[in-house]
Length: 630
Image (cartoon, rainbow, N blue to C red; front, side):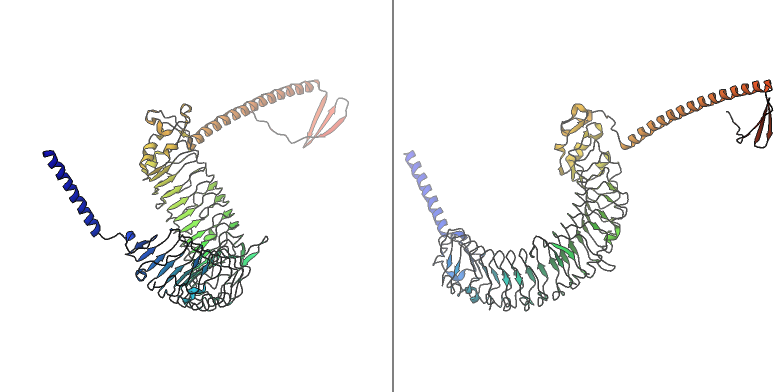
């Protein structure tokens, strides 16, 4: 009986719990993706008024999409749509954004978009359209039209006629070969026009005649063969012009920038990108009309030299990119006196520069970033950067530097980052007392010794010494508050002289200590530095440059003493032999006098000898030289 009551009570409790859960589920509101009004294959986000039917393998747009007036955004992306038929979007009167990107749409019927009275943005990118659909002309409120990556091959003068409110037009990644007259003539509010990655060969001289609202123009990656004079006349508010790889380059390129190429855009153009156009020469005053120019990109061209004062008229320039050209020297002033005062960044990376001069950086007093990486610079003269007192970052990596004079970095009071990796430096350059220096990269050089005061007066917190010829490090490095220390790929002498290094490296947030190996003593060669107990090792007295100088001096002194002793001994032998010869001559003379065979008569420098036969012989006598013996 008790068992029966227990089972009955349990069943009753289970029933109550199930009923309660069912009631709560029925009363709870549906989640945004599970709305009862949401069509099949779609997801509804009621809070943002989004109907998302993307990634649903749709071959046509469903006719019933629920109460359409409540949606502000409709996304039907990454499906298999091929045609947009008439009256597809009927009653979508409040729709602001329509995205049909990444389908296979080739046809848009003329009345398919007629009810979208409030549409601001439509995205047809990555489809198969061959022309701009006439249907878009009915979208009088449209602000942005995206037709990127279709198959559009031509533009008609009236393709966007009537879209008076259009502010952004994207035609990138098509097959368009020309811009006809009048194409932009009926879009007075257009601010951004991008027609990059096409096959543009010609631009009409009048296409931008009425584009006085245009602010950004992107023409990169085309095949323009010629630019007519005054082709930008009318684009008086243009601030960004991107012509990266926009020019056609044949097998014998000879592209230059003639003077006054950009009239009509002088007032406000701030960014000019001419990268990758095969430009060989900059003519004088080429950029002189661009008085508001702040950023100039001439990278990846064929420039071999920069004429003196070529950027002098451009008082507002802050950034110049000359990376990947064929410039061999940087000795001429790019800015004349009173100009270049706003220059902040200059990139000369990946050129063929061999020498630098102090005059080359004249009138760039405010320069903060200088990139000279990947050149052929062999040495740095004294005071070469002395004009750059606000320089924060200097990149000299990937050169062939073997010598940096003691005063090369003098006056770099603001330097924070110095990159010298992958050169051939035998010693650490003088960076002492550069109080703001925080990053120093000396990796992959030929440094074998570091002076204890090499980093004195700096605030280095990232130090790269890997890939050198170091056997030991001065303990003074402990004084640096290091966040990064790289020391691998050096022939470390694992003795008590570097017992502090593992502990210091582990305190740093970044280190390659785990890869550092011992080279000396021979019994530890190839072993990981971290696995050896350096505290128990005896100091082997590593040879330093100072000790080498002392040893060489001692050997030279010993050798000099030996040479002098040999010379003195030979001189002594010579004197003894000379004296013996003199004594013998004296004896012979006494013997002749005793015989009385000759009589001598001296008269000045003449000597007469009268022999016993009465004959006289005359001869000259050399001046008498006294002989001294010590």
